[in-house]
Amino acid sequence: MRSLIIPAIAALSLAACDPVTEVASPDAETPPVELAEAGPAEDASAPPTDGTIAERKTATIDWNAARADFAARDFADDAMAQVASSGSPAVPILLPDEPVGIASAGADDALQFRPLADGYFAVKKGDVYDVVINGTDRLIARSDGGTATDSPLKYEETMTGALVSFSRYGASNLVEFMCQDREAVLDGSCDNEADDLAELEKLLIAGTR
Image (tube, rainbow, N blue to C red):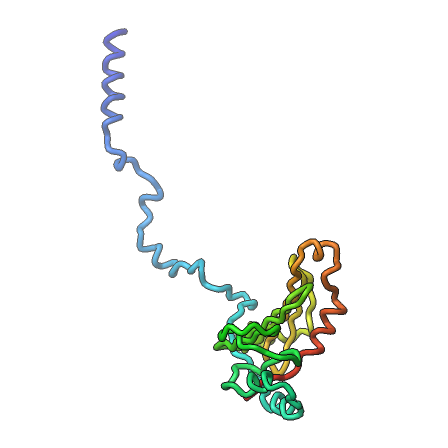
């Protein structure tokens, strides 16, 4: 019996020393070239192509309408007239009719204004909440031919107050109401939809090409 065990152990030792590569595998017989025949791998970071792809596009601004409304205004305030006549804005400028300071100049007026390459932003300080006004010529265009500004005025509540988005003269506009007291946001005493929309009615054309 002992003589039978020794050859068996030797046979197992030889099998353990055999290279693994000698073991046949169905996967090993598949030539690598077939990977190339399957076509190039898709880029995971590439945008989807299922008909809902979005891309950044520049808005078509109705400058004629903006100039007509601008010409009908009577600029009694010199500061507002200065903003209106400075440079060539990317979009028609909408601001409340009140004294304006240039934010980049460090002015301390209640309404701060700053032009940007694709639009502008302004900040109106308040006792209860601040109003941040943004205008841009950037649109999110869908592959079906529509744009993000094809929808009517949109109001939504936020953790700091509210946001109102809309389009005017073809430009995209976003007005944010930022409450200074978080408790006032929670109990609803900071602002409400009716008051916020009333603030939007005060926005007038203040600059155009």
